[in-house]
Image (cartoon, rainbow, N blue to C red):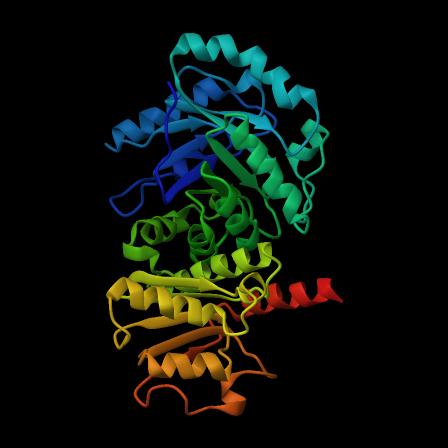
Amino acid sequence: MEMTLKHRSLAVLLDPEKADLSRLTFTDECHPDYLFVGGSTGGDTTEFVQELKSKIKNQKYKIPVILFPGNSSQFTPEADGILFLSLLSGRNPEFLVDQQVKAARAILESQMDFVPTAYILIDGGVFTSTMRVSHTQPLNPADLDTIVDTCIAAELMGKKAVYLEAGSGAEKPVSAKIIRAVRAKTSVTLIVGGGIRTPEAMKVAYDAGADVVVIGNHFETHPDEIAHFCQMAKSPNGQINDQMVNDKMVNGADERFMRLALCEAEKALAADEIPIGCVIVSQNQIIGRGHNLTETLADVTAHAEIQAITAASQTLGGKYLPDATLYVTVEPCPMCAGAIGWAQISRIVYGAPDPKRGYTIYAPRTFHPKATVTAGVLETECRELIQAFFKNKR
């Protein structure tokens, strides 16, 4: 029967040809949600899965072993489930449907749980074994429309999951921009893997919309680091503490809500509006959202902050928002700064500065006297989004 993968879960990918099970141990702090087994070239999958499940049982943990097969020969009924993959990023029928047909009867007769999954390879800067074996090319990460359209097609075809893969040993993981764009247009389970080597990179993927993050190549050489990733994945709100990232403090909440503001900015971009987005938060809950609508509404005052303030006031039933934090992707203009001040918002967080029209140039004292300001959260992503918009307009 079909199975559903858990939201915000961690999968460790083990290649039967490379993984050393003697180095793999589990503790209360270190047991991932899933163990994916597979690779592009093979290995004795049955023997490997049997040994792996025996190890899990001996350590008294219940971790599902899910097949991530490169071809039909890697199927084994010893596993707990299978990602029934179709390589939609390529056009080689052997991996679109032929290998699936070869394995279909065995999977059906095993009564194994399965997830119909679209496997989408995105260029991560390296030549991967998937490219070599399948004789297909990855999608260009700059071609966002093709990536998103492929994922939409996958959902329309009945796929229950999309696996965005940068490839084993990728130099660059799948970007937050790609994950957000796919998440905004599909409702399938979103799996992301390839090139993720730090807890911060994992958190970026989760916050952008990934349901499952898969890490394989990194753990082959650093099995001792699995605990750090497990702790982050299971921590409240996904916050990373100082021990996890070598004493570097990361404000998880600010990044998380700024990514949601970026989602609003993407909506503006889709409507051919200047891509600025805003969310307003109180008691860790979003009470207002907005994005730029000046062209859509033919209204010069319809900035993202104004839209979000109006929505927040309607949510709370009052015009003042003294306990709220406003997140906006670009530094507020003087008009918006005035509205933020009149609403008595106590904290403002913005991403990219606006050196031409920002409030700091024209109205630096506009906010409420007790308000605090945090600048530069996800500055690069916020700046690149708006720069790309104006570049395309030239």
